[in-house]
Length: 369
Ligand code: AMP
Image (tube, helix red, strand yellow):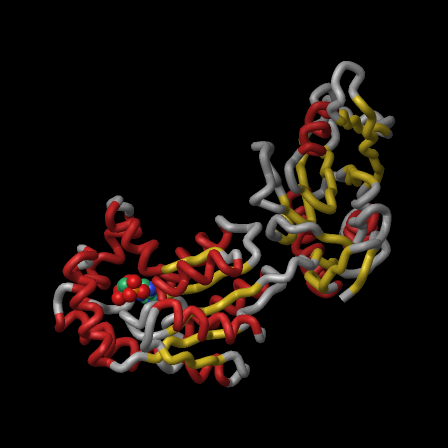
């Protein structure tokens, strides 16, 4: 990890990966350009490393020049206006390849196209080492792309954070500093996870995600996801991992500013637990604890049949389906106790008693984290 000004950055793309991506771009471009002598145009300041390494690898004769993006305040509005300067040479009839370090929103690209509109070039091609598809707002074609990256701030290899970091030979990604508390609320169906999550989310200001609730919402609204999940849910079986994982990722992404999450009904398999670790890691965070509500089977069946009378949940109305859900829990889900116990993150809590009493037991665990 490195620190630039007030922010921390973690290693993201190694010098070796950059080199390999550049080589791929060189090979592709050299093949397309053939015998012609192209003019490579770097966009300063960020592209100096890309251009330097790129042209050293380029196998044929080529020309190199730079343009620079200059910012100044608009006359009539306070909007930041950007103009490209430095294009002095005659490019009539030439094949011009713009070499960019990164394309995010595409604002610079807009300027490049505006300027080159009046140049009578033979072809204008855009090549960029990094590309952020989630941030890109324009529809200019990008002809050559080195590495696609998520929409997070990066430094190094020409890219700076407030002046620093351009000299680094590899690329770093910003590390979020916000501290999150992420809990997995665990236990067999009917253990009271949903009820307790409602209290805990208020008390600790967390976002509650119940995969069962999200599935039911989708089923009620006849979405594609709902229809897919329905057949599994009505039999008391698990919805396939990839479907569930994609859905959970999307729910977490919807709450980018959350102080933390209570995961209720997720993970239920090893693959889901691993996917959750990966997701938390991408947020520079982690699961702090799995808190399990322990309740005897016969109490569960009784509770669920009781709930089925008023909840309208089909999977609570039929004792066979209920027993199957409990069986699935022990066959497929209970193994996750070991997964979290191995990381010293498993905490069992007695789930029999009054609602408030159980909230107290859970809080006692959370307060010690
Ligand atoms: P729940 O409300 O947590 O009891 O979930 C109801 C049903 O939704 C389950 O019986 C599964 O069919 C499905 N479901 C909920 N969460 C998951 C998950 N993490 N993985 C697979 N299926 C799930």
